[in-house]
Length: 171
Image 1 (cartoon, rainbow, N blue to C red):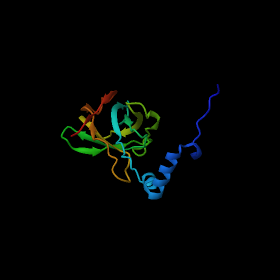
Image 2: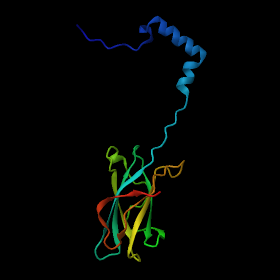
Image 3: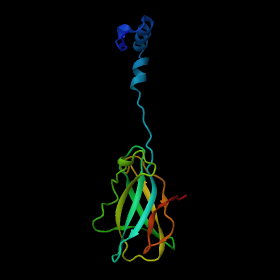
Image 4: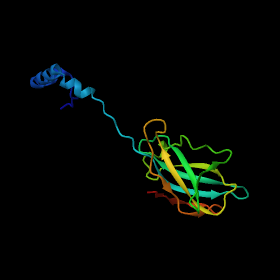
């Protein structure tokens, strides 16, 4: 007995199927079904974890942020320092940091924790306790791709959050 691969040629279709396809094509139904536009909604990116490690002897810290995006899109990130009084100020990046635009997520496409990226935060002039507020966006120049706004627990800027810490969604 030999195995045969089924043919996809129209001549092997049953006669009734060929006639039905011809009638649908003539009526324009087959063509319109194939040419209709389908738009897939964007899955918003998420911040899953954050760690903040102060560097000894200098006014800066390493922020490690884990970003997850179901399509593996690059993500822009807005980060604010929210002090104990509730005043929010965008963080200043230290010299040598990669920046907050185009952070990768593709390498951790199937990792629920996301892909870590490290940023150098200039903490000069900051003291006391506060928290970081983060907003990811994977479609900054088109329709909205904003993910949930999240915050870290409160921490002292001099001590940081040395372990990966889960963030909470701000409502």
